[in-house]
Image (cartoon, protein in one colour):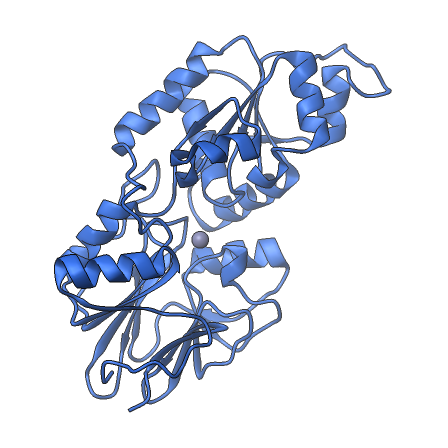
Amino acid sequence: MNRRVTHRDGIHFDVGRLVVADARSAAGDVNVVSHAHADHTFSSSPETVVCSTETAAIATARTGVDFDFVESAPGIDLVPAGHVVGSRAAIIEAGDGTRYCYTGDFSTRDRAYLDGFDPSAIEADVLVMETTYGHPRYRFPPQAELDTAIREWIREHDDRPLFLFGYSLGRAQKVQWLAREAADRDVLVTSTIDDVNRAIASATDLEFSGRPTDPDELRERAGVSAERSTRDPLTDEIVVLPSNQSRRGWVDEIAESTGALKAGFSGWAVDDSYRYRGGYDVTFPLTDHCDFDELIATVEAIDPDLVYTHHGYDEAFADVLATEYGYDSQPLKRNQTTLGDFGR
Ligand SMILES: [Zn+2]
């Protein structure tokens, strides 16, 4: 029997019809988009897809690609995945009654305005899960403890500009949320983050306080541009930026001249190298994914007959599941179709 679940462009479920999740091109009879991160959305206009209203709004705002969507289809149900606003896991039922749970990116933690994924509500024979942090090194502090540490750090540095870096969709909004809770300070965001803020506000009742700015305005206010206008100097604002901008020259130039501090937010902050690579003064393991223990707890709560892992520590985690927990488990390697399957 051919394996029914494969990792190609997206995850393919060959269940009588072809269901494709999170692909760049819409190759399935049915196409699922779990959430609006760039690596999970279409690069061109697809046929009707299954996704949440929020995901459709955010993806369209970010890519300019408009698409028709439905929130469920015969044999496919979506449930909240707790990763970012609008993220969903998919329950896919095959013609023979086999139930697949595709988690997409997920987190079981309730955080700020997001409810976590609830594995106790899932019934599935086969679990297809992302395992970004599927190594025991990645254990994150309890959410309340982490949020408190971040708010305290913001309060401790109330006399300096703060540059906070996080992924544009997800961490950037959580950080704005925590900044607003921590201090009565102006929050500035880049245009990329402002676009995401607006898309979320258009599809939900959430609002984020960041006012859009750009590098030129920040450099001018910091007094490091040719304009040398310091009538409105950058003194104690909180600036939220995409994490891929942490090493930009203009960021360090402003930080040096104003005494701004740079903070990074990611699960990878568990590794010291994350701080050095990003040039951060401080890092916090604030993430939108499960840590190792939460991944294990998810498998145990769903208790499937078979687990496929993908992304991050897919091999290591499948190995732990098999050897320490007795689950049939296998990493889902991209474009690998010849490995023996488990009959489903
Ligand atoms: Zn994601």
